[in-house]
Length: 180
Image 1 (tube, rainbow, N blue to C red):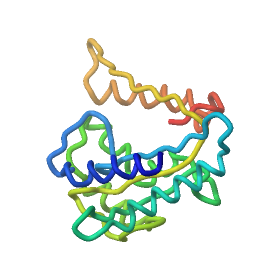
Image 2 (image 1 turned 90 degrees about the horizontal axis):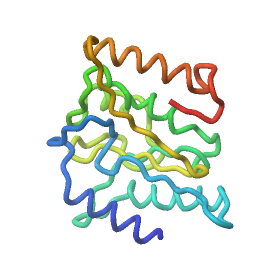
Image 3 (image 1 turned 135 degrees about the vertical axis):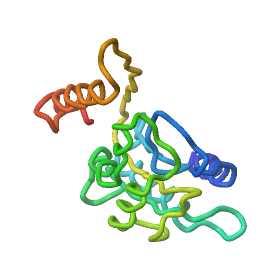
């Protein structure tokens, strides 16, 4: 499993260039997020150790083979168990939401990455590759919803959606297992 994840990440880092990427979903880098979820008899601690090994692989790079990228750990890959949503907020992950599009690596996100030292890898982010977040948590189900409206402009629609998402999440006083 570790070798397969490493190989997929290496291919992505060598084949893709974040500077030309346009999307409706945020990302911190070409290899945006690697989640190690304990399944079956595997433990969260084992998944955490796997996440750290994968993160170190990404952070050290190899000259002529793959670039090194800044790596930020979350969940069981860190002693403090930092939540993924908190990490993403600190990296400016959700900053493009008001515009409804993410293009390349925004200056705001690059500045946030410079302000928060990575757990492993280079201190400076390369705009071609961005960074990666790697962690270990129990299995998570994520939902991305495409929202449209009649009679609301984009800014008002996004404002209402953010308000609903926050009220639904533990952070906003809602369901304890919901992160936004």
